[in-house]
Amino acid sequence: MIGVFDSGYGGLTIFKYIEESLPDYDYIYLGDNARAPYGDHSQEIIYQYTKQAVDYLFAQGCDLIILACNTASAMALRKIQQKYLPKYYPGKKVLGVIRPLAEAVGQISNSSIIAVMGTNSTVESGTYINEFADISKSIKVVQQACPLLVPIIEESREDHPETELILKGYIEPLKKQNPDIVVLGCTHYGFLEGKIKKQFGKQTQVLNSGEVVAQKLSEYLEKHSILVKKSSDRKRVFLTSNSSEKFDKAAQKFLGRTIKSQTINF
Ligand code: DGL
Image 1 (cartoon, rainbow, N blue to C red):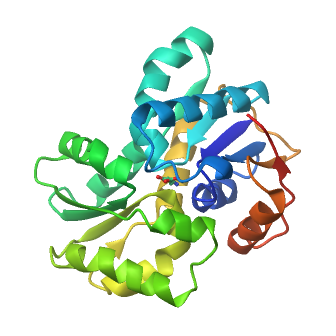
Image 2 (image 1 turned 120 degrees about the horizontal axis):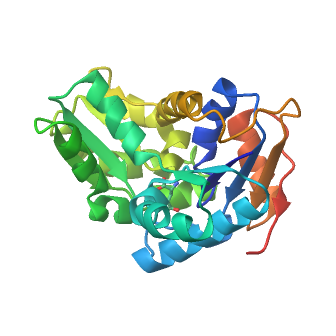
């Protein structure tokens, strides 16, 4: 079974593409909506929250967990992979989303100007800058923290008029740098992809994070096929730490089908 974790709804923008390209697995999605946004918490808090989610998902029978959350990937993944898993879950895997996105950009071009939009934590961590530096010295990264966007998504206010204005405030400074590619360095922003694309205009490519992560995951599972068993049950379980009614509404809107989630307590 594969676990997909996010601080809230954002990971659904990744899960949608993962289940489309890899339907023959069982999945559990866990959104820690009650404690979102993560992006303004300290590294220690983000690590503790992510560790709780990882424990919960492994206890449900997951063999592999995707941290479909850039903030958790930036602030907690390394410690989980290097310290926590070897001690408590040897043989199980936790993967993040930042490395695959950086690699995908590197495959498109290794000398571009890349704009990264993300949470305060992700931007301040410098994780994207470091990952891109690993891939090519001629990639120039310009970053913009967009702290108001996660609350907008968690409150399902994507289509309210103020959202366009808030986006403009974040996107205008990036546009002045003439980026070739935009990375949505927060999975929540996938809910605003259409609006973000429109504001950048046709000359800038906005990378679809869900497609990239799904593609990289299927390559990973091809190489590590014994890690997770395929399943004809195609189980889909949705868990949230907040109201399940609220989760179902938001998830339904994005996934285009009826979702019945369960509320959990960590
Ligand atoms: N989806 C998370 C990310 O990709 C949002 C973080 C938050 O809760 O602030 O960064």
